[in-house]
Image (cartoon, rainbow, N blue to C red; front, side, top):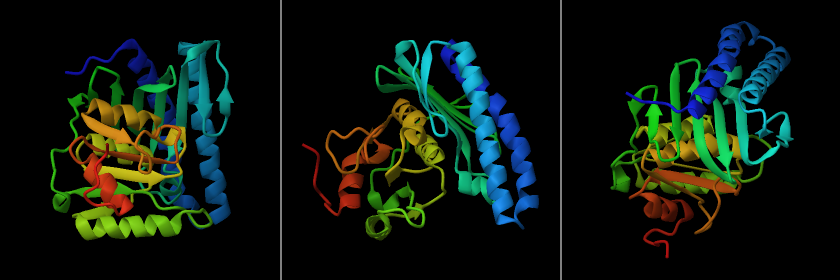
Length: 270
């Protein structure tokens, strides 16, 4: 049975409180599909309400901590070592289309590094969480990354740029290379859940470009605590939290996955 620390309990409590509003709003989305503008405005309002709840709950529990939030931006705190990195609704497009693949993501950054993470999908009641040195968990079950080593047997996940965003040609070339060498590629539309699923062994690897810290902060800790490796696609010593790319795999696959994505099969990290 998992024993969550006081810190994790604070994060879980905030996520569950914000999730109540999101779950209620999600139940209303179907009725709004006839109006594109109305549905989009509704989801934006749901996003903002969830962020406000998370800000209030986390501020109440740890009043000196700063914030980095998708909508509110950076908020300085008296404690320079600790900062909350929060995405109140990761998978907004899924939410807009009534697809139950979205999540609340909360990361505690300590001394500029991810220290603890909570990813919660209100639609499925799956709660992924981890704290540095304490392992990774799905509800009360311990998580482990997959043990697959043969690329031909692996399942990758990725994200593709939305219309009008740069990087589409590169993403398509990378995806084609991965499709040729693996059991498949999934594109589910939530970076936070893609990382959580990698930690749970559902995916063997996940990569994406041009994300933000609130998309990946919680997932980085969860994957690492599940025994996985997290780094950058393009750089040996890249920072996946603040860099242009992220790659998460089980520890044995990292080099092979990175080489495959970059078209450098067989090249190993020095």
